[in-house]
Image (cartoon, rainbow, N blue to C red; front, top):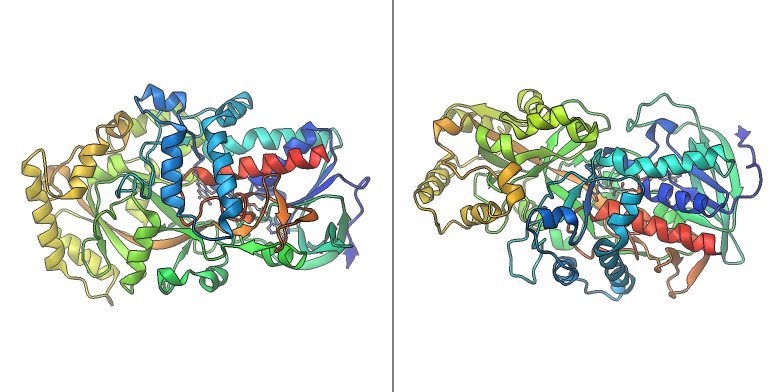
Length: 555
Ligand SMILES: Cc1cc2nc3c(=O)[nH]c(=O)nc-3n(C[C@H](O)[C@H](O)[C@H](O)COP(=O)(O)OP(=O)(O)OC[C@H]3O[C@@H](n4cnc5c(N)ncnc54)[C@H](O)[C@@H]3O)c2cc1C
């Protein structure tokens, strides 16, 4: 067993995790002329962690992009939405609340200018995620706020990777890939370094799982250690262990929306060093997961970012209750689906709806936006489904395509032979819903919501299909999609103050220890509370990573 060589000199900080939050902290330290060692268990190919795969959606308040589309937003409206969504109700929420207030100020203030100055640009049409559907003080975004980075996830990472690589060239940054931290060194109550295993080289491509063969050990010392290790979504055992009781039993089967390195191992390691873990039962998983026909990591699932028109049925063929329409209330829908005792549900839609309303979350699923390819982007705005959506329709195991409803229902049965499917009820619901389209107004709240959405120019242009009858052959063929629960984000984590210093159970800061990004519940151990407004995860990594880097640089 070889011991990893010591750094050139004792660094000012060690960062555990080369995802977005760790890279942002490192970039801030480089700007301040500090020496940093970045330790990551994965090979260099996976630099950037989850953010590389992300859609690059960022929550901004009252941006020029919103204003150009006629959206009136304000800090007050965003705070109303955040509070209604978070539902903060615990003593442990003290720091989550403070981070939320600070984050809202950031998102309404310098966030866009700070990123813009680093070269980050946005797609001009702002998306409307988590539409809510309850009262004004309830869950959801009152207005569109999901700003897609031009270049998606890689586009948001690029300036920070460039800054850190420039730091490496200047001798300020050392990378230690294939170094897995197993312990935080504590002396006199202060964290003074890390210890762990050197893992064997691995030729895994980005995002693929790598081996855990130990070939050596290492120990590094620094006055500051930043835990930037991500959440637990790739570890289904942990997801099941922490599954909130209020949500019933975890589904029997789930897909993974994150790579295997999102393993949650660092959280108890930080706890052993004195940090307080809070809100472990708060997580953010999706209900519109589809099996990736071309997987990169184990159980790889892709989330459909749905427009509001598809009809949503549970596994037995009952339409989901109001307001659990596609894209309205992620966790409300999850709770409902779990309560049915089944792990899946169904979208039923038309070709016309899929063309306009299906987007797939993930940088690799959006080559036009990721590659900044205007020609490809023009195709998205034209007729036909985007290439990656069409590929899923053709190769995906969860898709049924048929010209008639009986054929569609037959195909659905074949995909779930062991679940009783009330096809008569599905037909009755679709025929009744289609009848409601004979007027411009309706008692069917989903249709009213669809019409409301189209009052927003962005939705009308590229996101919400003109209301039409599902059974109109001109809108066909008919499509059914079997949807699975997809694990993704961890909303709890290490409790931190506004400098990203890890806090102990007694509320004091653990000397030398910082936590950022998903490992810190995106700030304070849970900036979101119970639910999230979307686009706030990458933003939480930026904001907490920046705070840690600046605080360490100040000394
Ligand atoms: C497909 C997809 C789409 C998404 N889309 C969006 C979006 O549009 N908007 C949004 O806001 N968010 C989105 N997200 C979420 C967002 O990307 C993540 O929450 C965020 O990138 C997490 O970054 P992080 O730095 O906290 O952790 P990670 O990216 O998970 O990085 C953590 C790093 O720490 C390393 N590590 C862990 N433990 C150890 C250890 N013990 N020793 C050494 N190294 C360790 C890991 O190998 C990893 O490289 C998406 C995520 C995915 C997967």
